[in-house]
Each structure stands twice: as C-alpha cells, then as structure tokens.
Image (cartoon, rainbow, N blue to C red; front, side, top):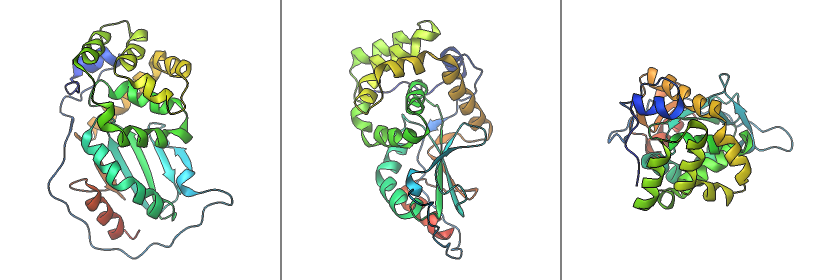
Length: 251
C-alpha cells in the first residue's frame, strides 16, 4: 500500500519547506533510445587497497552521493524515489551489472539523487543517509531489493502512518517509520534504532530532502526513475536502455 503522490500543500506540512512536486510521479516510458556508439573508454585502476564500487563522495551541493571513480569518463545520474516500483525494478535488473562491470572498471560513476514524490520518501531518504556516505548505496540497494516486502503494509499500518502525518514535526517521521516498518527494516541492516530516531527527529535533514526535491522538480524532472548519461537523458529508463546508453558512451 502506498500514499498518494505528494502535493505542494502536503509537502509543506511534511517538511516545512515550500515545494512544487505535484506533477512528479513514478512512471515508465515504453520507448528507449541510445546515441551512436562512442569510442571505448579505457579502464581505470582504483587507488591501492580500494575498489571503485566502494568509493563514495558527496556532490558539490551535498544533495547527491557518487559511487565510483569521481573522474570517470562516463557519468550516470539517476533521480529516483525510494517508494517507486519502477526505480526498484531498474535496481533489481541492473545494479549487479552496473556495479560489477561498469563502476568497478573505473569507466563509470553513478550519482543518485533522491526525489521525494510520496510522503514516505522523506523518512526513507533520511534513514538511508543516516548511516553515512559509505552505507548510503548499500541501504538504497536493500530498499529496492526488498521493495515488495517493504510495501506490503496492512490497512492498520497505513492508517497509523496517515495519522502520524498530523503529529508535531519532530514526532512525525519517527512515528511514520515505526508504523510502516522502516525502523525494524533498517535496524535489521545494522542501523541502530536510537541513531534512526535521532536522524528522523532532526528536522533540517527532512527539510534538506524536501528542498533537494524542489530543486529537482524545478529542472523539469517529473518522473522516476529519470536517468542521464553524460548529460543525455535515457528515454525509457529500464536497464536494457540504460546499459545501451552506457555502451554508446564508451563504457
């Protein structure tokens, strides 16, 4: 069960920041296109004792996290919602190959930007970021891998989460996370409950997610997943199309 897409009014209440995400939705295009193949990019060895798939950095504005060679010739940027089934499908189909074949080679970097299109995206993003930069992609992968189980809440849970949205701001996100089972989910993956509650009660964290999503919407991005390869949008953001675009860029 899933909340309805966020409206500006709902997001303002949720994150205490003005947003305009009413048009954002979890969508999938049926068509795909890739540019003409570029010359092959040479592999780049990681620093001694490290692996590119375990190398992480914040973007300059701090809203996104990059995994891989920060100077990779092929740069993939994904705008994704942690409550979006199409984003989960993209990860389930392609994350292993993306990480093991492309990012590991040093040819490709992946920048992930969380786009809040449903109320639960805010606590989910806060919790994924709560473990620090090195844990971020692993927790996102866990969310997407276990997507169906994470979104099989009962009506009672849904009603509890809806009621939690009316609580004072500092209580809202811990209550939503408890109601939807997120607290237990992240605890089982090594994120201490006390740390989760501290992160969820820290309102600037929620506001940062909301403001980042507002900035994404202002760019004209209105669906998830939206993927760019070296600045070119991948139409039909399914793994077969994304991989074709990576290869066309020389990866």
